Length: 414
Ligand SMILES: Nc1ncnc2c1ncn2[C@@H]1O[C@H](COP(=O)(O)OP(=O)(O)O)[C@@H](O)[C@H]1O
Ligand SMILES: O=C(O)[C@@H](O)C(=O)COP(=O)(O)O
Image (cartoon, rainbow, N blue to C red; front, side, top):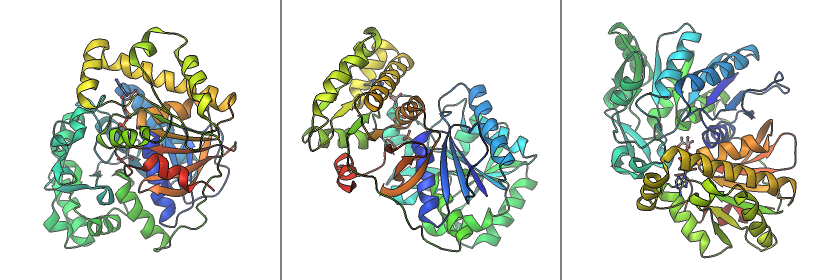
């Protein structure tokens, strides 16, 4: 069984959906489960909110997840982080990778955020978003983990205890045997991690074969998809469900370029309520006030949207005025309280959330044990159904989906 430790909830549903699409049976668990695994599955994905926590907390959460996966029969482990390598100079990708390698008594793994279907590619160890470097993309303005360098070796070296080498494109296209040879060479030269170039899916297919014997693999969902395809013998997923129509809300806390476009497109069509940071910071009843506003629109044809999403200039002003962490926490807590009332008191059954941190806090607050994985709305964004309640969710990564995502997701409901 493949055990995946994902550093946020949108990322977890991203990889879970690709595992299912590629023929594996899979459940996504909300945090480290308290009970043993109930059903026999090919893969378990544990969603953590560990991307932006202090390093020691991220390590502790990840090791707890690892121990549970090990106790429940996993034989290979995948550390899933963002395809835009969201992290700071202190971590958490490096320290968590180190802790997992140590727990496995191992000393080598790969670094592969590539997700070509969503435009994330790696060449000469540089990460691209579409046709530009990561550091020139909207990710340079990310509210929590601004990415100002695109060189994955440098990014990894700054936050880990070992050295990072490269398996270059010219080697990858020679096939899995050559990639494995490069692993041996890099290890002999004292490297602990290898960034592997992938400019399209063909290199991920090669890499999936080359990492088959590694105890720990790290990366985005792209490599996970090809590992699943290899494990399932090329089967395609069946029975991915689509949820039923019902009271729905859109909660958007991402400030990514794509989410800004999606929010603007949706504002023109549906009731939309701006979540004001100052009110979130100063008014203890703000979530209740938003709740009273949102419930007015729950029976409209398109779901009401509450959004904190703003473009980069406005984000910088807000962060300068209130402090980035304070603003983020106030917004996340407001979304969490609002979501809880919407579920418990207003009977909302479908939640569409945008943003990794935002989705993570909402799901943690709603308190499900885990999810079944449904049909993809866009690459990397599936519908999810709670294991223990009749509630469905779409946890959209900030940068994923097309401009009409919020409306399109609702259009799928049966
Ligand atoms: N208007 C805003 N001002 C300040 N911070 C914001 C604003 N809107 C959202 N945020 C914060 O930005 C962060 C966005 O992160 P996240 O939800 O992970 O989105 P993404 O998926 O784009 O990374 C969250 O912590 C959120 O609370
Ligand atoms: O790999 C990805 O890009 C996503 O799965 C992911 O991790 C999403 O993170 P957010 O952009 O913070 O939602």
